[in-house]
Length: 390
Ligand SMILES: Cc1cc2nc3c(=O)[nH]c(=O)nc-3n(C[C@H](O)[C@H](O)[C@H](O)COP(=O)(O)OP(=O)(O)OC[C@H]3O[C@@H](n4cnc5c(N)ncnc54)[C@H](O)[C@@H]3O)c2cc1C
Image 1 (cartoon, rainbow, N blue to C red):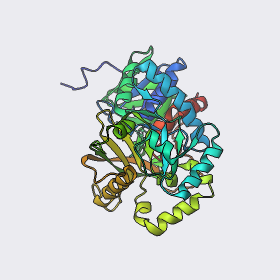
Image 2: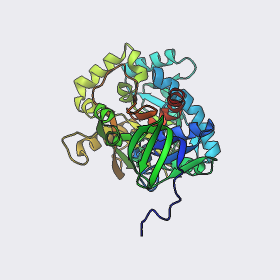
Image 3: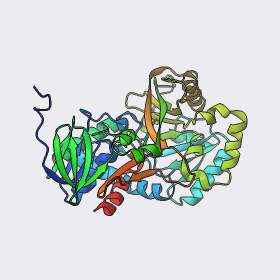
Image 4: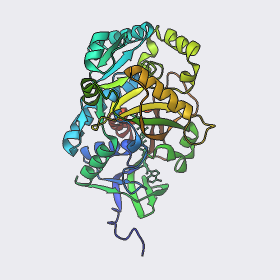
């Protein structure tokens, strides 16, 4: 018996076919149905299991720049509404970036000046009031940032979309080929064909299989994350600030997040790391702490070296040391380790935004979000893509 026979048949046609039900694909489906389009979403997996589902769910609004910032701001409002509509939790947690050196505080000062009202400078006492970090030089409070649980959010959005008129979400359905003809695109899938007015291909790192030109622009990077046991066992108040409080970001995030690139003080921060900890720079440690409801903490992330198969013990060590130093605790107990692969631009350009869009056929767009920003920006990017596509 064909194992697909239990699944309902695909509609023969749709205004929009979305290939891939990660955060990027679902963002386009949500936007298209709100515009009254008929939508078919196909995903090869049998449940939300793409790379989105294995990420930390920080909607990092304030630390973006230019187009990504505009998309992140729009995305924020849409996440809050979607959480209410689809019934999943979106926490207005905010984030605190902790400065452990004066040069980091100078960079944060520049951010606060540039983001009037959306970021506030904190002294060391205010950092300790909001986070478990007691030995900071200071910090910045970013009230717009959100937290969500990606697997739960994706499952809820996919279920909710399935209840919307004219929307069909088909799991276990792989798109195989896209063929142009008479102003339409024929999408051949493992479960039959759909004739689409427009197509969005949002298959993350698999884009090369449907559109090799875009695939060639991207290269997969593996990033390592850890989950550690609730830290500070003797300090319930500090643990509480971590569990219910903001995302806590370390000073190394200044080196990757684009909002800081206009700060003149950033060169000093980079030079200090280069002189004293080139290993931290090489591993692209982007220290972020997000507690789960059970008190355990997800520590992200560092880049796995391309020449080491599996995980790098050295990168795990750098993450654990940086997290323990920030929290002022002894060694942390590791509960889980995993890697998540994401596409980044094969050739980087400092001014580039994180969006890589392709047009393999008329009426078809491939959409990739790089730099770990898909959850942050996708809901704000989708309206722009659809404005241009329809
Ligand atoms: C360590 C790490 C932490 C991160 N943390 C954050 C964060 O806190 N905040 C944030 O904004 N972003 C974060 N990101 C980035 C973000 O989560 C990812 O970039 C994002 O999940 C990519 O989403 P996507 O929809 O493009 O791809 P995916 O989630 O990979 O979805 C692609 C889907 O396409 C399907 N598919 C593939 N091929 C086919 C086909 N032929 N036919 C049908 N379906 C197909 C797959 O099954 C999959 O479900 C992080 C990234 C990393 C690496």
